[in-house]
Length: 182
Image 1 (spheres, rainbow, N blue to C red):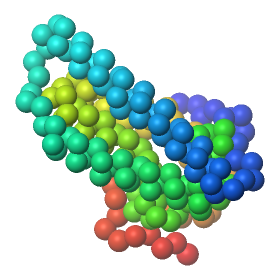
Image 2: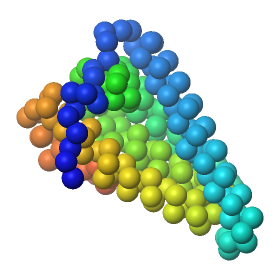
Image 3: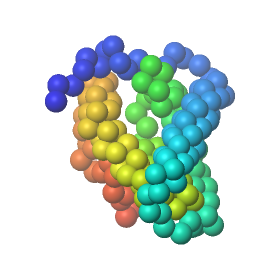
Image 4: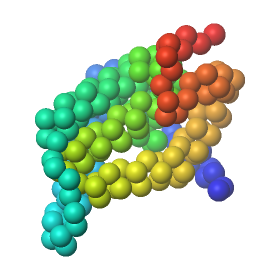
């Protein structure tokens, strides 16, 4: 797969205050959660009902707790991105600094882990096997289509520091001890 020219896709955020970057990050989070964690899963679950696709018993308490726990991880990751990275998760407003703090010390993309886990929590809420398929497809799409260009941009901008980070911190599997860097 050819990695797109990162100069066109990724642009560091303009210098701005933490409050401005975090407000933009929270706005992006509301849009993402509404679209990908409420509307699309609800649509999938409704389609399952309409065609009589077998479902499992809803696990609403577990789904709600998991959604809150992983939502907190996502919000904390966004806070760290805005505070330390001086940017947002959007490629056109990317962090100005490499973020190796907070949740990023444990796993390379805690926002993706959080979002996919929240999607799974939504599947538990609805009792929907097809929502789990939707989440799996989203994870594969992110891993194959988005992650390579994002990481190519980070490597181009942060060089050896990013390569060291990648060697020590995995994308999907959290470390047992936080990464401290050199």
